[in-house]
Image (cartoon, rainbow over all chains, first blue to last red; front, top):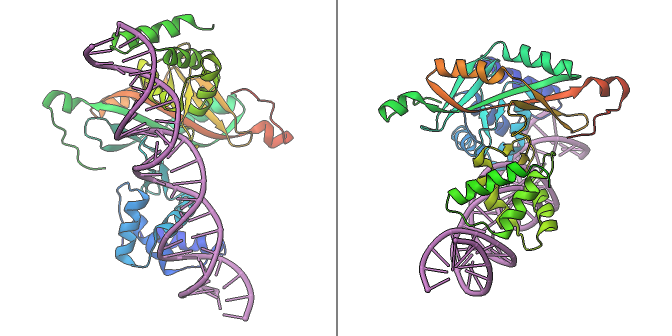
Length: 154
Length: 154
DNA sequence: CTTTATGCAAAGGGTTTGCAACAAA
DNA sequence: TTTGTTGCAAACCCTTTGCATAAAG
């Protein structure tokens, strides 16, 4: 469906790793990238099963780290119990997240300088950054004024 | 022992909240701030018990959120299974963490601009930041060269 | 055929919670 | 006393794992 390139890239990656291309893995990859919303493992299982009923929870949990390793899916720690996954890094490599404590929504924003700035600091300390993750918890000014928040997208 | 002001502030905070000042809470607060190292809940339990044997795991878990609420202790998500706690925010309010994937050590560094920069971006999006957390995973250039890392402090 | 992957269900492991006993105020 | 707090152990809940079966190559 959506993002055929991404799916193809991942299948190629798996094949190159000597992994077998099973119907379950294909369904999971498909489900993982046919949305732009953040999702949990449970969430992904549900959607993958709509593509192939035989997908199990275990396989989803076993496949997710592979997707993350490709760099096309990002694991998000939003401070909840569960991990979230973000399929938008292929198109937006420099985005970070604001977590609204009022409406519980997650808003993505780009900061093209963050990486450069923080890498500079880290380099001076003798490190070579692999990932730079920024998380902002915030309240919504609109909510503070009107008691409601119009943001309803991930 | 160390940081008597901090301990006092927290006890005051608890009293102001109508909370009772129990020996267990005092021991936990003492243990929480007589070190500059990061620690886990289990870790803190161990050290609190050296001050008062009667401290239980449950009370540690029930007390930690209170300490975090005071703003003097910070909960750190280092990507491990357990949460870590950082008692150094009173003296270094603007520090963030580099997690070295080579030696598994955590290095603190100050970035006095991060808050200002990111708050500006967030404000423009209609948010009022409550916390700005930055986490850098990195490899160690020294380790890459010599195969060993001289950093052995948290 | 050989070897990897799968589903199931049980185990793991940090954290939370119900409850009766206990101790601040 | 009164009411909040504690310790214990069980419950929680997401995630991982062992194992026999299934299917990719």
